Amino acid sequence: MTDYKLKNYRRFLYILFATGLAALIAAVYIDYWKKVPSTIMIRAGVEQELDFRVPASGEIYQQESVESVSTKVESLHVNFTKGVTFKANQIDNYRMNLKLFGILPYKNVDIQVIQDKTLIPSGIPIGIYVKTQGVLVVGVGEFKNQTGESVSPAKYILQPGDYILDVNGEKIENKKQFVKMIENSDGNELILTLLRSGETTEVKIQPESNQNNEWKLGIWVRDNAQGIGTLTYVDTDDTFGALGHGINDVDTSTLMLLGEGTLYKTEIIGITRGENGSPGELTGYIEYNNDNIIGEITENTEEGIFGVCKDDVIQQTIYDAVPIALKQEVEIGPAEIICSVTGEPKIYNIEIQEVHLENDNVNRGMVIKITDEELLTLTGGIIQGMSGSPIIQNGKLVGAVTHVLVNDATSGYGIFIENMLVQ
Image (cartoon, rainbow, N blue to C red; front, top):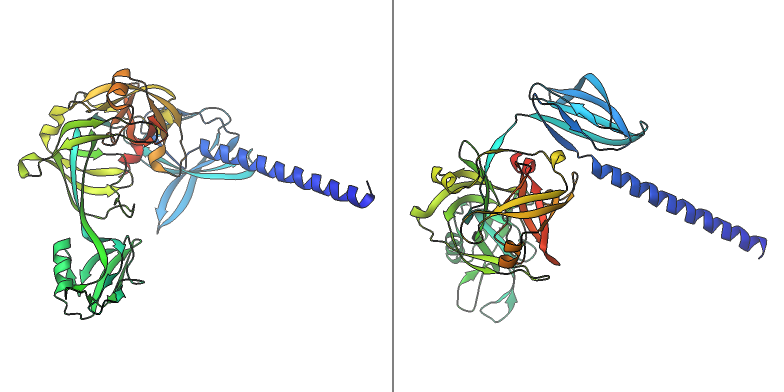
């Protein structure tokens, strides 16, 4: 081998070694990053141990807001190479700045001291009806005008996921009203107030006439959604949390902007068993009348739906109020869920297989597996309609079932209860 080739070979080995070392360091850093959550909640007046076992140390500061600027006061040194015991006597917020090995910048962690809380796990089936703010654009297309030409008035102006809130300054209450306003436009230019990606904007659009001499924009819109799910918990003030995930539009996959929403009594009338690659579902019968209303939905968020329920909802529960478990208290091992696949709430055995204290997807804090033979026989595992089923471990409310793993019907994800309570 010539000196030139030898030199290139050595250079290649050095690059390969450096790349491998960088990849290893990055993998270790990411692994450490996931072990400590960016937000930690602890109970006021109770000693609690945080045992993350990472080679990180740093300072904790009490935060005081002075004209929206955080000021550090009274620092306390912590070292997470071993368990650290915390006790805060009053509700407050703290900031923890950590460094790996005491040198490398690692993570800034918010510590929230909260009042200890008890909730009533539910597990009853619920019928859900929500109306959007304005109307939601779910598609943009073409149609034939009176000369037979394909036209698309909304193309490049509207897009799926837009909420149309006003037309010419008039508030849109529902789909029927919106369609009528377009039909009565006589082809005049319209000013639409939109909510797009969280921001309000106005656009101008001109309807065109189709072959039936009807004024159209060439869009499909939706103003409501219905379905069934599971009530997770009821609080002492009759507020509730359910589903463990938000209600998304089936076509655009966007979180539906809630105008108003209602909970209804529902009767489970059928079960489609889940199989690997084919999620099952619960079939419910809902009568949408005032006599069957059991609650009002006031919020639709990524963490679930929330609102106020009637007193008689608590009478259907089989559990008394229990303490909540903070996410650092959740353990890998046996647990239980409460769900109503047969119509009445019942406790079934599961196993918590993974706990992810730091996850970009708030709905996937835990990986769970159904181990109860009776439930597996009935449903094949986790099926649609079980979302929101409360998860109990060591006598505490841990969280709620959110999704099934499509390739393994017996397994799925859960959200931590503290994430639902943030709402």
